[in-house]
Image 1: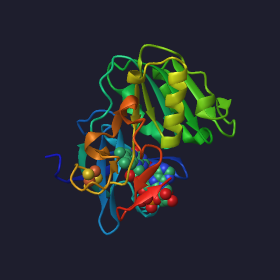
Image 2: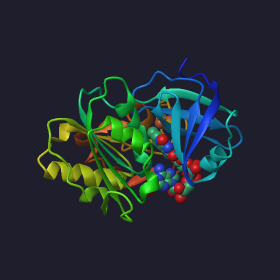
Image 3: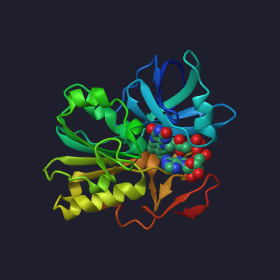
Length: 253
Ligand SMILES: Cc1cc2nc3c(=O)[nH]c(=O)nc-3n(C[C@H](O)[C@H](O)[C@H](O)COP(=O)(O)OP(=O)(O)OC[C@H]3O[C@@H](n4cnc5c(N)ncnc54)[C@H](O)[C@@H]3O)c2cc1C
Ligand code: FES
């Protein structure tokens, strides 16, 4: 069933800013936060996108695929398969750290029933990068924000924030360079590496562990991940250093 395409109607589109939209479906996926779906735009491409809730994806406009997605209107349909990947391990209580578009895959950990997220640390360029902020403030006791332009929270990078030291799991999502910097900061604070989980991204084709295009030093991000415990990946030669292009060539960052 997971490999079948669902022909799904877009019920609602939320415009967070010029380059960031959430697409709400009239279909709910049974999923674990951190898992992704493959969204197919016939004639354009098929790409992995994380579920930001059971019936929603949140997308940043970058290249051809996301520009195509941004042309979709409420009432249009999308062909979607999944969900795929492992998702974040179930944890009674956790600290979330999201940078930019990496905030979206973490949202369901807050909005799911019986959520026990105590702290959500978010970093972005500017205030409008933070989605569903009012709703988040109602659910999470401690929200810490850093913006590069100072329009919200402290002025600076997410690594400038005071991160609380706890025995909980830390779930990090965002650009790989940011995730590595945050993970190293956590370790310097004395946090155990086994408490730190990252969500990795690589170019994907099949999304189900067959083609190898998403390989990161032998790990298939689609099937072995996208969520990895930091100590399992931190010494991989391609972690934060290289990924494969559309044609499979290894490209250094
Ligand atoms: C597991 C997984 C989950 C993902 N979840 C989401 C999600 O929830 N929302 C979302 O918007 N995207 C998500 N992505 C990324 C998505 O699959 C596309 O790669 C991305 O949207 C760009 O596609 P594009 O074809 O529009 O741009 P491309 O044509 O691929 O890229 C256009 C330009 O943007 C750059 N670029 C591409 N991807 C990124 C990136 N991630 N960060 C910074 N620069 C980039 C490229 O180098 C290029 O210069 C996820 C990827 C993976 C592997
Ligand atoms: S995308 Fe094919 S193995 Fe991961």
